[in-house]
Image (tube, rainbow, N blue to C red; front, side, top):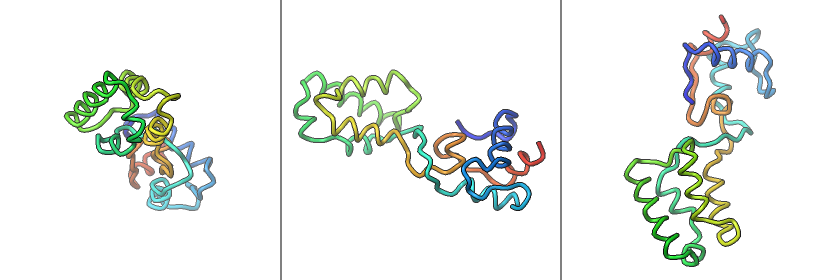
Length: 152
């Protein structure tokens, strides 16, 4: 989800997050400027968030070759077709439940644990910013977003 400063629910969520300084990151309407609060919101944190999109090359690099060879021919064909579709569309949409389930079906946990673990790790983004933790992968806030939250 991208941040929309015209969406009152997102503004309220941002305002409460900064006002309570939930992550203990130094956020404050009282002692920090909007520019400072935006910088803190965009700085890496200890949060983990779900990535919204994963490219085909990242998917290929996550595969354990020995586990790929151990797949059935049908699973190998399914994986190749899946990669071709991801390459054609530009990325795997992690909000597409059917696509994620399809990947899980190709790479069973019992017979492909390394690949499955690597794919799950791809889906999660470590050191997400506070903005990403609140509003999704790739979200950046600017001082105007914080100013709108301050005045809400």
